[in-house]
Amino acid sequence: MRSISVLISNYTVWVEHPPSARLLKLLALLQQHRVCPGPLLSEELHVSRRTLRRDVEKLRQLGYGIEANPGPLGGYRMVSRDHLPPLLFEEDEAVVIAVALLGTLMSGGDLSDASLRAWSKLHPLLPEETKRKVSAVLESTLTWRDTPALQTHLGTLGVLGAACRRAEVVRFGYHKPEGSVASRRAEPFRLVHLYDHWYLVAFDTERDGWRIFRVDRIRDVVVTRQRFEAHKRPFEDPVSFVLQSLQQAPQPYQGEVIIKASLETIRARLQGVLPGRLEPLGEHRCRLTYSSPSLQGVLHMLVSLDADFDLEGPEELLWAVSQLGLRFTAGSQPSP
Image: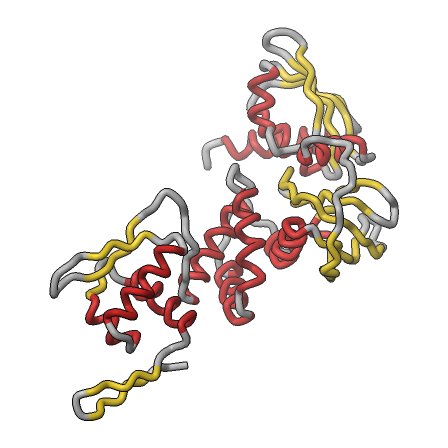
């Protein structure tokens, strides 16, 4: 509701914003300007100086740092406090924040977990038009780690993240690698980013056990609003549980690599590249037992080693490695 003022003789009759809406408008004005003069705020809000002072005090009680400068030209300004208060954003600001969050989310870096938590809180509050603007920006922006599956299912990540936070049962269709679709009912616990994929760690109520689900294979998520008490977990760390589950799952490409570098060096280089088990073979050698669903995954891992190695594996893999070596050799030759 827009407020109006009507001047009658020497008196002003105010038709005011509802108090809660007025506080939000006051907060927006204080965030937009370095210093807001009191008379200007009173005029914008159509309230008396006394009411303005009461509204400022209400914001202070909510945790906002607001300083008052006395005098006829004095005003109010926002200052930092020891804690972060709730923030108010315009639509274009919300688009920028959402895109920045999703950029961090897709990078898979150290801040991806925090980005996911923030995205799961922001996503349900975005109007549909704002979501379309965010999608338009993402579709026109490319980074070297972008994956179509992740961009397509960012909404799914937001819904699942919120369900994890609120401990609410979800139902969804799950696409298996062979192409079939199974209906699942699960109690979501955590979302984990590993090896360029997001995984949902959840208790599968129909199979009565803890499972991991690749988010890019999840479709048509329904949040039932049914709360649940968490089942006892057979693991302490959800990331370790995902790792263990991936290592135990049968993969078409498995083998060993003897690497001519220390275990610590290779562990740092391979973090987040491919599931595998590392064993020391002395001070400057180690063995990697790997498992991958694709040739590309193994080739990516070998390039990431940045060290000499001896490879054992199926003939198809050895041929692919030799072809990659020839391609690198040809590319390193000067142009004729």
